[in-house]
Amino acid sequence: MSIHQPHQNTIGTALDLVGSLINHSCDPNAFIFFEQSQLRVRSLRPITAGEEIAQTYVDSRLGVMMRQKILKSDYFFTCECEYRTDFSFTWLSKEKFLGGSRCQEELRDCQAWASKENISVHVFADTENEILQCLNRVIKDRNTSGTRKALEQIEADFSLLTTRVFPKQDWPDTLWPMNDVKLLLAKLYKDNENHQQAVIYALKGCLGFTRRSGPEWDDTLFELLQFIALLVIPERKGISAKPSSFPGDQQLWDFFHGLLHQLLLQSEKTFGLDTAYTKAIITWHANAERSAGRPLPGETGFSKRFDKAQSVILSWAEIDMSRKIVLTG
Ligand SMILES: [Zn+2]
Image 1: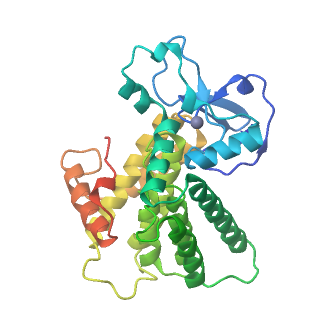
Image 2: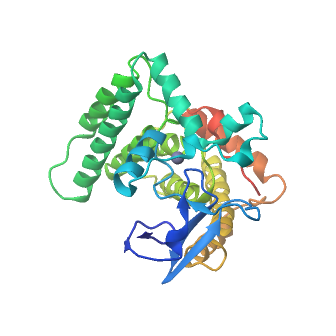
Image 3: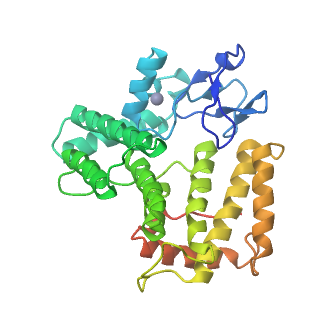
C-alpha cells in the first residue's frame, strides 16, 4: 500500500499484513493514512456491526471508467461494486438498490452522456484517458525546467480533446477529469501571476467535485484556500483590471474565513485532533481568526454573510449556485 500523510503525496510503499486485509470499494466506509510511522484506519461514516470495512485502492476522485481500468491493470481484479447483489440488499426496492452503488450510478451517467452525444462509451473512455495523459505531460513539464508550452496552446490542446465527446457544449466541470483540468490550469495561471484567472479556474475545479467528504474533500478545500488567499493578500499582485463583478474585500475575507473554518471541521472529523496536519490547521485557523471581524465563523449571523459573499464570488466566476459550499458548523 502507498504511504501518505494527510495532504501529502505518496512518499513510498509499505507491506502491512493487517492493512492488506482491508478490501476495496469505490464507495468506502474507511480510509488509511500514515501519522509518522503509524498506520491509521479511520471510518468515513458509521459502520454497523458485521459490516465489512472497505477502503479505496485508487484515488476516489477519478471517474468510474478510469477507476475500473486501474483496478484491472494494477490490482488484477474487476471492480465489482457494479455487480454487488449482496443478499442483504434484497429487501431494498429496485430503485433504492440501483441508487446504492456508486459505480453503477456513475456508469449509467457515462452511458447517458455518450448516447446523448451520439458516441460510443469506448470513445468516451479513450478520450478520458488521453486527457489524463495530456494532464500528466503538462504536470511533468511544469515540474521540470524544460521548455514549456504557452498556456493558450495547452488550453487549445485540452479543448481539442474535449470536443470529441462534447462537440456542442463544454465538458461539464462536475464530470471527471474536467475538475482536474481546471485545477491544473489554475496552477498554470498562478505561475503566470494572473491571479484572477487562476482563482476562477480553481473555483470551477474545486466546486466540480461532487463527493464532498473524506480526505479528498479535505484536500480540495485546502487547495481552494491557497487560491483564495491570493486575492486577500494586500498587494493584490496579478489583479490589474478588475471587472465590475469583482467581489469586494470584505466578501473575499468572509469567504476565506468560512472556508478555513470548514476545513478545520473537516480535518478534525476526517483525521482526528491528534494528527500533525490537524494541529497545523488549528494554528492557521486561530491566527487567521485574529484578523477577522465579528460574527466569526460558527457564530450566529456568519453563515448569512458567507452565503452572500459566496454568491457574489460564484457569479463573478460564472459558476452555478447549485455547486456552492455549505457550511456545516
Ligand atoms: Zn467500483
